[in-house]
Image 1 (tube, rainbow, N blue to C red):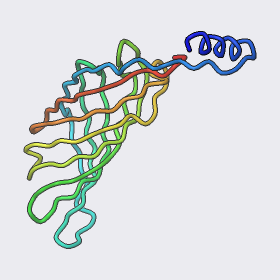
Image 2 (image 1 turned 180 degrees about the vertical axis):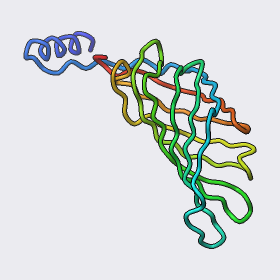
Image 3 (image 1 turned 90 degrees about the vertical axis):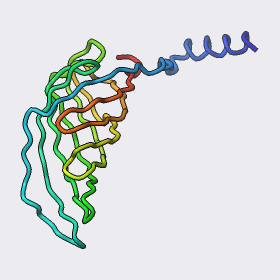
Image 4 (image 1 turned 90 degrees about the horizontal axis):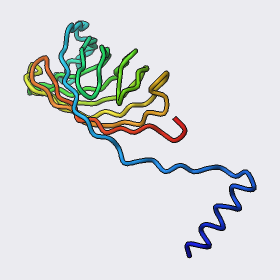
Length: 159
């Protein structure tokens, strides 16, 4: 069987076929985040007792990600005080795994009244510069203006 696989690989290489690179297992890292500035709009919709608000947070990350991301998101405060939301994070000149570049991620979250605690999940959608080929996902939990992320990432083949 090994000879057959080796022969097939040789034929593909000789014919100029695509080279397949196997991705390594993802790297796991922990990220510490702090909100430096928070801005929000007045509630822009009220339906069934829900209030929907647009917000922007400027953060600082240290640890597995180093940089100053900006979160742009919409959240809904439900009649019982619970909060749900989603948004995007943009980080220019951020460093992950010793590489520096830009990324955009999508995230969603839930929170207790007043954002006393919150938790959510995210996926990096795009990356450029030194972060080209980045594939990443993870989760976060927070209290007040601080959060802790668990990040799993790898860089795609040929990067």
